[in-house]
Length: 360
Image (tube, rainbow, N blue to C red; front, top):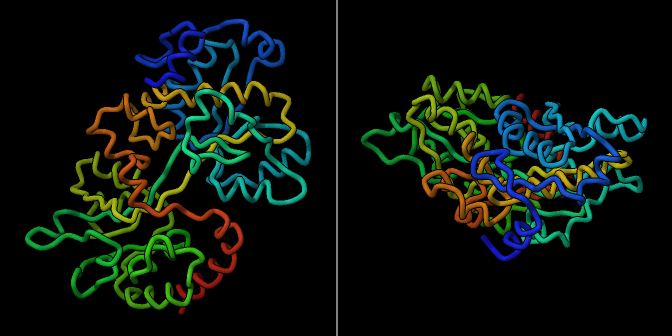
């Protein structure tokens, strides 16, 4: 553990809120927070995230500070709800786990719907990689889209190793599925057509749709949800499919023979963001700092291969588990980071064109 971590530990009393996790002590640093609030409400993704966050973040933070943290599941991209809460000054949540495009949408106008976190000088947060940070968000989870395939469909022949292979219907025949949304799909088409990672943005839509035309008749299913594509992999209904890696890993954990291609993975970032005007902003900041502890982040991998954001977290993760984490350094190095600004500006136009292409 680095010097910053050691210095922090000397100012704290270790608590066993989670086995092996370092927890902040209940010291005078929390007294003002106790006076302000006894509870903060955090929007998360539900499911395994709520379970893991409760054990690793929420409950230990309450034990350390006396401040209860309640996780609430909401829409995948709850920007409308945040706009409504801030405009009304009525806060169902104090903070939220949201994507980079959502953060940009909520802060691009004159009125900002998120609070600047102001944690850049914190000894733990300051170690976070720049690409996991923004003025209004502190990265908490990297997610990734990969090419997944059924190993049994490629017995005795070469399995796909790239987006180019997925788009090569003659060299790699098989049943394909594709997302019924341009997000990620456009990038995959460009990478398959030979565009270098550094040149994907701004996306050449003419080139992307020309590539999509080549495989359209070979797509068996246009999927709309992670649960659907996970079932497609488990049942063997399709042989190849671009999918969020967590769904491919879940199918694999159900004993489906699923292979994962990490090369040219398309990765994005979810961040902790504080709603503008919430009276519990300071408690939220302390909670965010609490979640950035690398040893604590490593505890998340007991529940799923988490896309941890503090680089030192990998010092505490089993190497066999680490290679399944979307933020594993080699995956980040070989991947394409989603351009949040591009999709903030172009999503409506791209979606309209993609829907028209589906109907053509």
